[in-house]
Image (cartoon, rainbow, N blue to C red; front, side, top):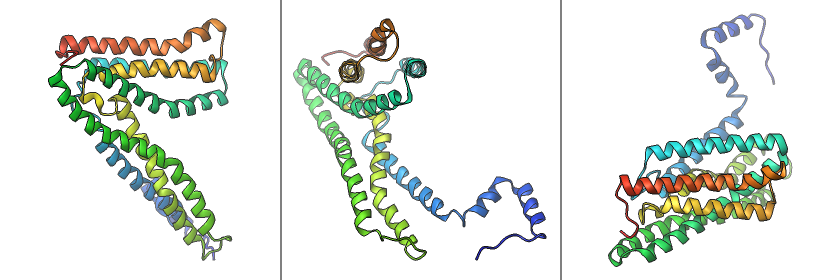
Amino acid sequence: MRQTLGEDEWPLLRELLRDHGHRSVLVLLVPCLWWLTGVLVIAYHVARSARRIARRVFPARPVGRIEDHTVLRAQRVRAWVALAMSGALLAAYGGASDAWRQLVQRLYLAPWLALASAMLVAAVLYGAARPGRRLLMRAHFRSAGLSILKYVGAWALLPMLFVAAFTGMDVLMPHSLTETTLPVVYVLALAYWSPFWWIVYFLCFASGPALRNGFNLSAMHAALPALATSGAVWVFALVCRITAGPPPGPEALASCIPFCGPVSVTALAWWEIHRLRHRHGMRWRD
């Protein structure tokens, strides 16, 4: 049965809130929100485990990656400016449906185009390398290949786990919710959906370092991430133009917008390569 506070207990509650602030409110609400507490605890441990594995598969600074902090700052500024311009254009000429469609399209296409571009650039650099250098590049390619297989396998498992979670809940879940079956349903739901969300977290934490470092192929050649990124954005712009058509807005503006991103990324990529050659001693064939 529910219990309410008596008249003599309200002053004690007000004094507790005044002395301890919001922490006391959380302590009082934990028994009432046990289901939310359990979800948050499980989600935290699932995300932490996925992040640890993702950083192990795709480290932020893989072997062979030369980081130029000046270039990194310029890339961050370019990314924020591009994000602000995209938001302003969508707010002025587009709608929520356009923004959501473009976001889903980018999330789905970007990893695959970046992977294909990195593999193509790696093949070109391998063909141009000297015979002695190729032996070392093959060793790096084997180690990077395992990381790529794990990443592709995670994407392949994602829809399978989603369907398996729905099917398992439909088959094994009780048809009616009562006070007795509610804890069982809660535990089964956590057990079914935890693997799916682990894969989601893994892909979220792994995609950034993977795209930035050419899926660990940067160990083959220092210029590979810049070349792969430059090639991927041009292919991505072409695919988006063919599948989605021109962006919203006036005709002159819509004709220029799709090329602003690839041009700026390519300019930064070639600036990075220039600095790698003149400041870090990078050579194309060595």
